[in-house]
Length: 347
Ligand SMILES: [Zn+2]
Ligand SMILES: [Zn+2]
Ligand SMILES: [Zn+2]
Image (cartoon, rainbow, N blue to C red; front, top):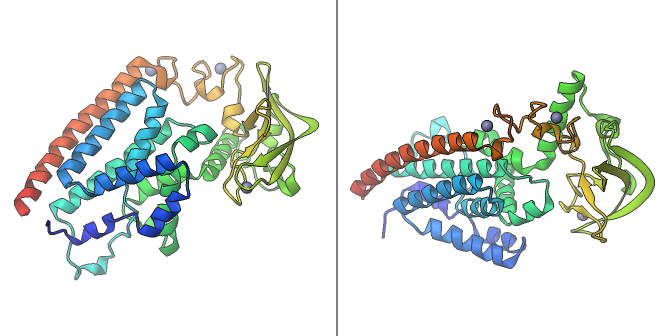
């Protein structure tokens, strides 16, 4: 049996009660697989773990290059299963405690950092406001939220080790914050310092939806005065929306992208013929060329590159990213091997 330093105690990251909570989430098969991946990772030694993370990184690069978004989802699930809970930064006066700063501990922390990075890189390619995508990422999304929430019970996320990464992950996971931040940035850009606040914000008061002022002024958004009744897919709460977004002959009933905040469900319509459109400002911002402004190269959208293409479909840009990543991977692998060899000597 290996002598494990203190740091490893927290690697039993999924306590049994957390297991139970996960079991309630999402599809049974996906949950079982998630457990299996998590167990496989925590039962392997550091060298094996390093190899696994290498593999995940390589597969992510390939999945993105071939635009296999399903694969990106499954890689994020696999990485999240191996993720350890955030840990408190060591306090300065803890010098008396045994220092975990040995080679093994550094390697362990380094692998966790790479897993977190891989997860938010992957998430960056996906649209989490899309219900289908979000459900494909379960139970990973819920588990990561849970890990963060649990840490926040005890303290600020800013006080966690690798706080920047955790904060970034937290930002991506809480669409709420992300969407609002995006809306704020956009309204800043277009109208000076005009934040969408107070009565100007969208609302779902007394069961009736109303978009924010910015959306109301979108020429493709209008009030039909005819209410469509939507239901929360978790608790069944009703929401009426008479607002639609119409583009290229398609009409979608507008619903809040945040869904039903109280229970975390999404608003859906029972009749699949009625299309539901999430009220994400940047998605509904259509430029004179008939595209989403953010994806229009002629308009210099932020999803486009100097080659006048969308970055995720631009071969030179993808090749450049791939090269940068494989160089970094090679360097990391070299470092990890050095650490692993030193660990082997320490045993
Ligand atoms: Zn609900
Ligand atoms: Zn354009
Ligand atoms: Zn390009």
